[in-house]
Image: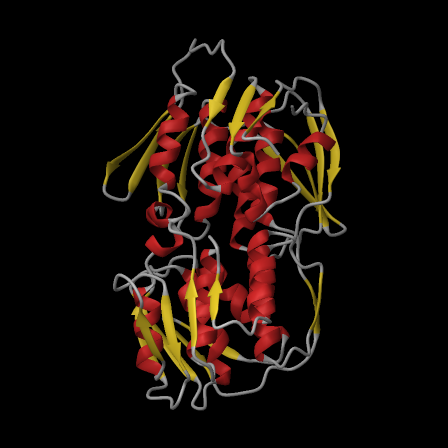
Length: 409
């Protein structure tokens, strides 16, 4: 694909069934569980996302140095896996990946008995691992407001530790649905864990062989919710989604009801149609931060003001997503600002604000920037720079937009 693509303003009805990509969150967890269980599990409908392809490749690699590219989930899950392994290994990633903090996870693993050293700046990849010799403790205390991927990484290796593991989470727990997703998948493969109050306990026990079909990706579904909200008329079916989902991003169904999208679940799919919207929404994104960019863009165009919390983790993603979004939303006449620590306000463009030229959006090496901004084509001609970034989580995205009748050149 070229360095930029043009999306022509789309004014006709959206009517299609979207064969959504599979969840990379579920896929990457299931792949690690399968490996820890002796590669006996049967996994169906694995994600085609580059992050999942990378995870699968590294889990079967005999190389001493493993490169996760820009995959944060893979970096965290592989760090826990290699920390308790029997070989000397090195893990690294892209320059941006080596700026993403990992100290809390490394310190927790070293407390358990791992031998991990930093090859560059302390607290950041690349990392070097020595073989795991002996478990030093069976209990850890870590903050509840850190990335759930740290907690999930520790939980998945927990049953393989001789003494198991008890994790006490201090303070407010962020991204709880992703911790529960991990425990639910572990249970699917025979491992029981208890999550009571602030404490999670997993005893030493073997993973069992089983089969599992990965659910479609609710994060990917969010962009279609945005398309429906912004379309003049729409009837879109998204396949492979469960109403009772493991994925925290299934919250998009509830959030988007306030921005004009109705969800009807039937037969492992959800039908999206238009409904009335609200003028103002208060949203806490701490359990679903990956939805924030989608909601920002949609609300900015629909004239819905937002008051938001739980956006702290966006600053250390592929880019500083709050800063990048503030810049791009300005092109729509909207304003995104942190009015006091932890509280963000989105103010849509004033009435009568007009845009005459095609809108050119930058993507900041961030797949979610590209996918969140693309639905603007329901209102304006759009140019997306560096569109290939979508391969990280939803490689078929542009092809699926073409299925919807959107003209891309």
